[in-house]
Length: 157
Length: 158
Image: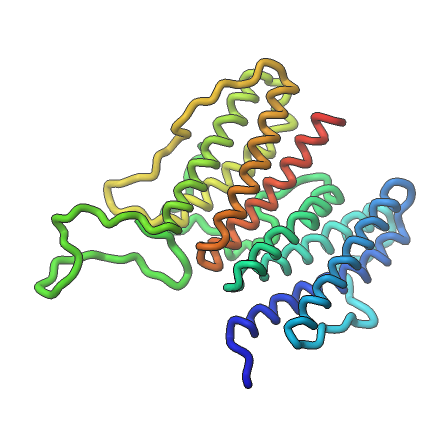
């Protein structure tokens, strides 16, 4: 029997989040090699958090009767890591990617998954802010999804 | 008043000889998602007011709080942009209640922290009844506000 559209959308969103977690696990391995001291400890902790999140998603997908997407042997990282500064930048980018993926889960119909996605994106958002040294107004949202719509630009209140 | 989404068009009411809305009956009640959106707008306005007043009273906190205030102003702009207002009716421009500022900088920061955490919780409660794109906006704002909690924690305990 074919899966109902909403279950298919949920699976797609879960698999996308899992893929992002796989990439983050891989990427932290690269970033961590360039970090020392407190940064190295933080990277290790974040790497372990991603592995835990990965395991959670794998279990959720298996429970839905699907095969969890596998990690790739290697990933093309968005930037070259050659020192601590670029390693911190990579860590922030990895967290942004995970945040975006969980935001995708928020768009599904199932309320439990929607809440799960919204909660799951908070820790990567905080980690990204920590690595970047600054916060952002709309974590995970692509620029195209942000508009001032029919009312146009307003002066800030 | 309607909530905008990428899949809906503004509803235009017109007189018709067929059965339809009674133009003499007054505006229809607001739907739950519009009420939630208006509540989100009000909550952001109150946060903005709290930040501005705190920065006015404790100017030394301005460097730490300025970015967070700017992000709340961006949140408010996006939330307001999701509301389609009938001609002649506008969403209130400012916070309806004027809360007093705490008597010491640490207490003021703690107050902001509590307000941010409450805002995160409130955004998450709005997810269930929202359209997918609006739910994503609420979730993104909640995540942003969660980072504000962390920043304020750092100021309080750093």
